[in-house]
Length: 75
Image 1 (cartoon, rainbow, N blue to C red):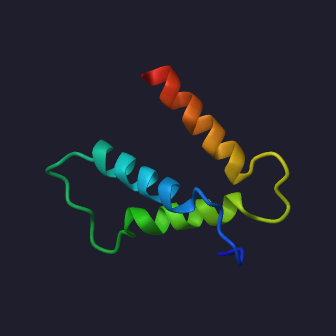
Image 2: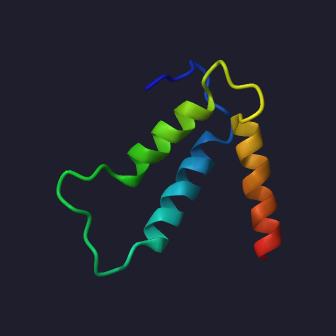
């Protein structure tokens, strides 16, 4: 996993948003299978990928903009 030295200002909020979404979509009676990574591990991996140096358009700023628009449309 590649991590930048400085994180995007929205990193923590996106990480929490991702985890809340995953947990909300999971059936309450379904336990995570043994050996399954926590939702935070998936969030960290995705956010690290969005900050890879070769990205020019699909950046964390773009992710924030898309999620904000989805939030407006779903309200």
